[in-house]
Amino acid sequence: MAARRLDGLAVAASIRAELQPRATAFAARSGRVPSLAIVLVGDNPASELYVRNKQRAGSEGGLSVAVQRLPASATAREVLVLVDRLNNDDGCDGILVQSPLPAHIAKADAQQVFDAISAAKDVDGFNPYNVGLLTQGRAVLPPCTPSGVIELLVREGIPVGGKHAVVIGRSEIVGKPMALLLVQRDATVTICHSKTKDLAGVSRDADVLVAAIGRPGFVTASFVKPGATVIDVGISAVDDRALAVELLGPGSPRLAAFDKRGSVVVGDVHRSVEQVAGALTPVPGGVGPLTIAMLLKNTLAAAERRLDLRTAG
Ligand code: GUN
Image 1 (cartoon, rainbow, N blue to C red):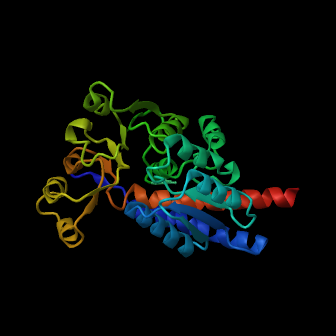
Image 2 (cartoon, rainbow, N blue to C red; image 1 turned 45 degrees about the vertical axis):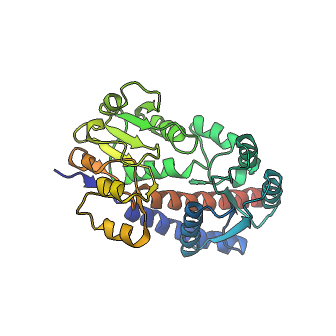
Image 3 (cartoon, protein in one colour; image 1 turned 180 degrees about the vertical axis):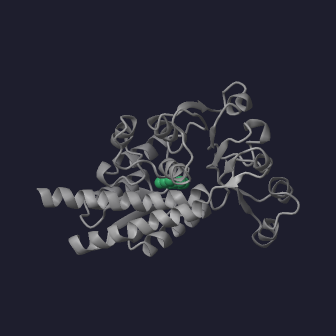
């Protein structure tokens, strides 16, 4: 039997609908709409698309989203100067520096940029202070993708308490915070990665399997216990037609989109999993819309918190 499809678009729409009255109330209290600044350095096409989607969702949700662009040649110092200005801008509630930064910015310098974002405005939840709160189970601004996955599980009525959750991927953005949020909800959590022995065997023990490695179609049916819930966090653009046919299936209507655009977005989970899993998130239309909804939620939470602190002081 085909897996139940977990509709990330519908869940994201209900989260965003819940945010609307809060955005209106904030505007009534403060005299301005909650505001998010997105720092975009260079012209990476995937980043341009992510940022456009975030901008559209923000303005539909009653938030102001200002994209602050810097050229691809910008130095880490120039990005730091911009972050510093936004940290000190009282009308800016949330700051997101779109990752990745251009390759000429060294990893340690990029880290410095992310660390420089004020914890109170860090809507990505990447700042070490916010990561610390997350590890202690009291995050104010949890990372958007993992918290979106939790919202999806809760709202779709999929329990995780006492279940075995396996997270494939140990990134700071998804894998690690995902594992922390699952353990806080009483799951027994295993984190797998490229050095894990018998990755398929470990994954096959999962009641909830989260794939976050960015390798198209990597998780096949042999990784999945019958009836398990599978969450596909991967988003990869495939521009090889043979690979697109293998991943989507020869009869897929999405091949027409490939032929039109020359690429198609796919997840980490292979279509063969549909016949084994109990529930599955699609790509696109699964975790992606939830990440954006949680970004708006964090922006609103940051705005409300700053306003509360000001009015209390
Ligand atoms: N690039 C891809 N995903 C993300 C994200 O969640 N936050 C930031 N800042 N950059 C990204």
